[in-house]
Length: 404
Image 1: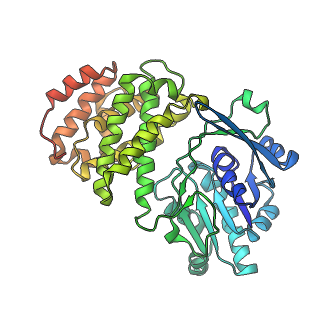
Image 2: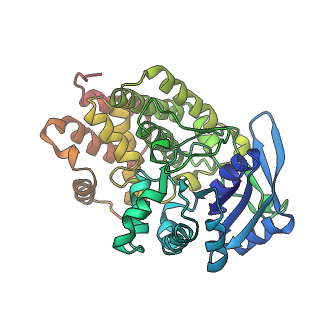
């Protein structure tokens, strides 16, 4: 079996490469970074280090090679012969690979007639729809139906935390990667157009809409992770593990994540208990000091993370729509808006109001007057400090009986 992984970055090498290697796949990476490509091709392997607070495990991912995405003929040939394709590029790079990927898939269909599944390992809600739109732009309209019959675009929920390799790490090997032990990858099997190979820890849960897993990832994991990074700013912490060990930060983040957990349980009519376990497992994993995951990495790009439907405003909207009292989520959104305001020079509350009118119009509905008032009061409060006791006083000023 051969897997083609488009994107030899953190997720590609740190997560997908390991899963395919454990399943005895031949692996071909497609990337543009010559240092990574040369490192992988040096001896057709790379070191993969799993780290936790009490141990470290090194193994080599073997039977791998890498090619440059600018080598069009090689890319087309590899995709034509693949049993599974995976993208792990990062959302912003998908549009760059779409023309070549569309061309390669059409060549595959024309020469082999075989269907193919593409696992989309990207942190984007509805990434399957987004990728379909990108690819169809480069395919003649009369071939759209054939493409849709032959190509499965399968969303995934990337839960493994993988920090960027440091310069010190790269001294070990140019393609070295460090990861946490967590290695489960849920995917949307309903979107498959051909049989999926058996790969341990690649999970299709037929009992629930896949959006349950993507919402859990984005609105609990990503939201809590990023909120931790933003709260770290108030204390000057460099690493996520330092921030989550602070009692105030841990209490605030966990409470906000629990509010979203209640909303997720209601949204998908799933038991709250495993979701609560997941929240506590995440808090434990955030404290993995050997990852040395930086707050800068986790919190970067607030312009994207404060967009409609992303981790902050998406979590808030799910809480509102499910009538969950979400005071700590509202405060978390306010903290995110403070970071956004500082990065975009939106210091005026009116600027934030205009921003929210575009990105989260639901908050201006008359039935959410209290939530809107609390959000703007929290924004003003968190511009100056983070203090849970003072925040509780702010909540008392906006007290009202919640549904939950």
